Amino acid sequence: MKRILMLGAGFMQGVAIRCAQARGWEVVAVDGNSDAVCAKLANRFENIDLKDRDGLASFALKLKETSGLDGVFTAATDFSASVAWVAKKCGLPGHSFESACNASDKVRMRGCFERAGVPSPSFLGITELNRSRVLELMQVKGLSFPLVVKPADNMGARGCRKVLSAVELSPAIIDAIGYSRTGTAIIEEFMDGPEFSLEALVYDGEIHMTGCADRHIFFPPYFIEMGHTIPTSFSDEDTQALYEVFRKGIRALGLSWGVAKGDIKMTKKGPMIGEIAGRLSGGYMSGWTFPYSSGINLTDAALGLAVGERPANLENVNQMISAERAWISIPGKIDSVSGYEKARSIPFIRDVFPRSKPNDEVRFPVNNVEKCGNCIAVAPSRKESIDSAEEACRVIVLRLAVPHPETDAFLASGLDRTKVFPPDAFNVPGDWDAAGFSHPEGFLSDILVPSSLISSLDLVCDWQGRTLRAALMQACEIEAGLLSILSSRDSAILQRYWEGLLRGGIQGIIYLYDKNSK
Image (spheres, rainbow, N blue to C red):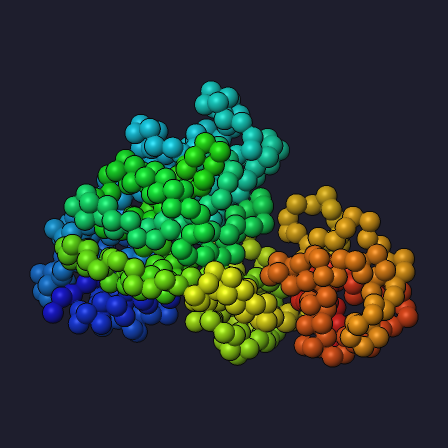
């Protein structure tokens, strides 16, 4: 029986733990969180910080001497360097420690790409030591706005944002440094164009391309992935161009034995690499949407690499489309959640994964770990898969507790068109006003709608893709008490509730109702 050391015992590592056990292996999991959700799933669990490379190596060596150890593995964490360190110390298969560090530190990564001539953005590493000279250093490097600022060593878009001017630069750098374990930020040329997630298996230098997904990024100046769709909708020619740049990047980093995950943009200059990591992807791609769409158990193949096996059975046996989408919230505290069972009953929905529950504090996301949950669909056609995943997210509604200062502040900020973030739920025409109300033909009950918005009812959509009409009807289905309020002839009341809907969507108008009812 083989034994594998799994770095991480969170939800995203659960797939790998189950997959290894299905092979008949014993899984020893380690995690700095003693309450990690999949800790009890492993055959054995140890509470060790994944940043403690020497502690991990010491534990692994003892494990190897006493019980045997055949491989070390992680998925969807940013600790591939820890994996490589342990593998090196124990004489196990894996990427070299040097290459794993290249794939973990974005400053080193960009340097590797630059020296190898791999298409990627111009960049500059920033710490507290040179932060005061950043504009001077940018001029030397030939960098100009717009830029992207991010931590040199984190994942999930934490501390990452687009910067348009020198005024925005300093706070963005401070934020990025705060998210960096090494206190390093990287500023780089902004790449404009659609983005893709790619994965590959690397066996003794042989690169086997597996999947390519379209990423759907929203809410500037941040980069929030509201989902992905696999396989990509782009042409074979474009996909092959993405793969070729990915191969060059893998080789430039020196990744030679394990998994490689890439984020690549298709720009006017052609494909350019955002980053490459030496691990399986997070965001539900490697463990869910890729195997759903292709029939290939990528996690199983990656585990095989970790114990020295050549990848096999990488031919697609399915011809399905898998779409993953997220649902989000305005700031506040969750009181209750509705819609889970309805979401699960939608045709083609395979999974509904809540990430937030009642009593959790939530915020409008500024990174990819602040979303509230995800739905995954699998269907024969792209439209069916996407429509199902998006509809499932739309039926899930987080009702917020009242009163809450952050919700109040969000709604009170009003429909200020000069602000960039957070955006209003509905981007209505600039000439909207509440000067007059009318009852549109065919509308439910006696609800009064601002006359200037009637033409927009079926045209503008919120963050989840609900039209203004659909959002209003859904809010009234959830809270029937809104019907009488929205039929009121009091223009001040109507204006307040309509502003709550336009600013905060379903959550905003129901929050106002709950607060006023109390």
